Amino acid sequence: MLRIKRAYEPASATDGCRVLVDRLWPRGVSKERAELDEWLKEVAPSPSLRTWWDHDPERMDEFALRYRAELDSHTETQAAVVTLRALVAEGDTTLVYGAKDPHVNHARVLAEYLEAR
Image (cartoon, rainbow, N blue to C red; front, side, top):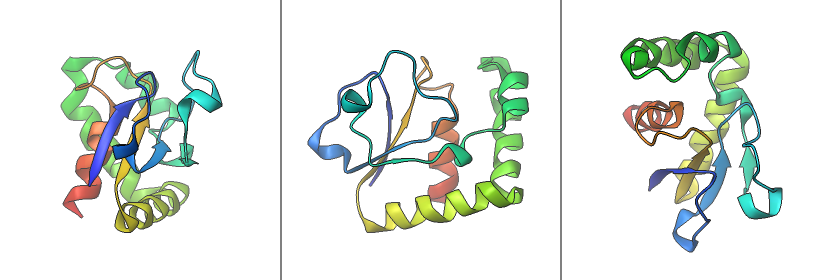
C-alpha cells in the first residue's frame, strides 16, 4: 500500500517504509522525530518548477502535468523513481512531505504517478 503523510504527523507502525520526497528538509523536524528510512530528494520537483508553482491551488493541474514530465525525463529523477518503485514493491510505503495542504502538494501527484505505472 502506498500512502502520503506530512512530516509533522507522528510516524506509525502502519507507515511501513517512510520516504521523504522533498528536496528540502522539513523545518523544525528532527531526524529522530521524522523516523525516515530514505530521503529521495531527487524525486522532488525541480527548484524552478517548485518556485513557479508556489503551492498555488489554481496552478495545481498545470503543475501536475509539468511535474509528471520531469519524472519521465530527468535522468536523476528517473533513477530515484526506480528506487522508489522498488521500495513500494517490497511493501507498505509512505511518502513523507512537508507542505501544509494535504491536497495541494507534490507527494499526492507522485503517488498517483507511481500507482498509474
